[in-house]
Length: 343
Figure 1 (cartoon, rainbow, N blue to C red):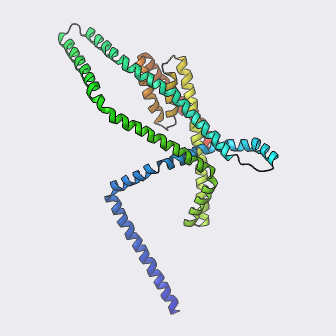
Figure 2: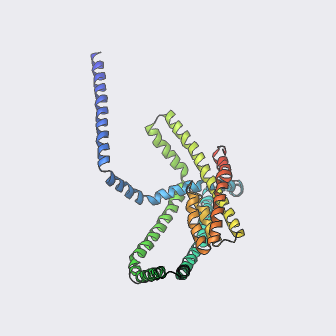
């Protein structure tokens, strides 16, 4: 009896001492984090930068998973059963489904690049060649307005001469000094391309072994929680995945529809840079709330530089299109994909 009482006392003292130690350790850690926050944040960002290809690969695998599952279901019903009848063996269509999905994504990316990059190059070239003429035209109009005022004309001429001298000196001196910046930009593009390649490889491995990863993650959760808590966590994660996946797929469909509508309407309105503007509007529409504005502003500037009147018409058109998307198309598609009412 005395021994049991001593054991309970020791156990209680040990528990209280451990709790006190954990509280003190937590307080010290919090103070350390507050005073060394910048250094810790730099290290976290450095680690994230190193792990970026893996993070990108996991994200790509998550986005590709619905497409892979779609092709896997249909290939199992057709090609899989045909092979099973011939060989009397069950063959997995996972690898072929992943291959088809990756090819489709790469083809879409290549198509977008082929549509956008040549037009960007053409627009920049036209802007560079036409910019001096536009400046001269603007100066001519200002001189015409100020033809009766000698001081204003002299001020305009002085401003024009100083501006052109500044541009000339910048091209001769400063522009040549930007070689290192250009090289850094090329190396950055090369690094991004390597990261994307590694990310696709990681995504393929994740998709091939997704069931194994699910079991391992569940084992990790089981190590920290009891069975009931584990079931609740798994249920919440599955429901969140269903809703979030529905939102992503719905947003992609919605953005594709907006891009097509923009393309058709810009053709009807005889807008310049139709393909480029439609791709910008469609892709940036994927970004919630701010996306339409991010896509509309550079597109409107491009069209305004070509034709101010058409630029104003485009701004009005985009405002109407975003209202239709935000109040009719978007709620309808996202409501169906997430299980929520459009309201």
